[in-house]
Length: 419
Image (cartoon, rainbow, N blue to C red; front, side, top):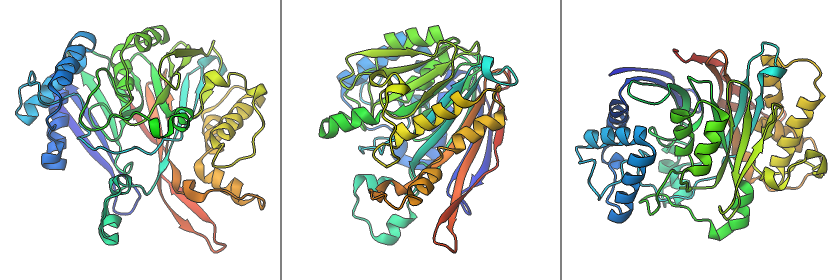
């Protein structure tokens, strides 16, 4: 087993701490190494708690039958914890502990640019990851902590890890950014076949379900793949958009915290958006047909045509539509082939600080300022043909003399799959 770990930001003078972790070995060894790291960091809190025997047994059978690559990683997790992988009392399929919390939604903007429309003939997936910058587990769980103790708790999204995995016994190599769960907390990524994938919160479903949202955090009482495991499953097993479609339509899914939808694209420029209905009883495939695709946080199957959408005035209540319309408009108006700088500029136009500036410049705006805590924590840009990814991270902000705020971000950090 070869392990390379680098600390890029340690969090002392920036909002986040960031690590780059490269793992080369069997899937068993990858799972074991990640679990050992979780134990070192979290101590006893990393060890799976007792769960329903019926569900654990069924979950294990599901992974053995439908996702054997992950079953080998689960065996490695068990070895790190000194447990029997066949033990029916503990679920080994994740490393995010047993936090029974309601996760804040991730408001994200994603666009796919197929090779036919870019200057270098390369396909790009461009993604803004938007999330509250100052919300901690204590806030989500409403823990009665003293102000100073609460202040010391890290933000939930302040410790991402850029992962490179090179499995020797099955599954594609991949480059992805993880949060929450080192084993399967994949936020966006690309594999060695050039398949790229990202996820976004389905805010329509959350709003419609309201108090009936069926989160399953903590002890699992469901079987299948949770919303972030879906991304890891596709990166491990799929090379083409068609393979990913079949995988999504045939795998068993649930959400641990909130419903998501996904965008997937292969190296040839074939892309699609995958959504489920609010009741999760219908699956939708929205094909890109070789054209650019944009997705934010509303259900596209209900709003398939941007021309029929109302031209919205930006507010916290409809910012997902505003971000979508802004990206679609910028992409549709460009006559030249897209350069990397064009793509970065498009996503900078819907950076969350840009939204705040837009609303602040409108004297008639009266809205809920709760979402003022949200920031674009990172922008990801995946180059399918080169097998590389660039990330720019939110590091902090300062208040200017006129009372406005400005953020400072990292330069783009570039990583490459070793293929």
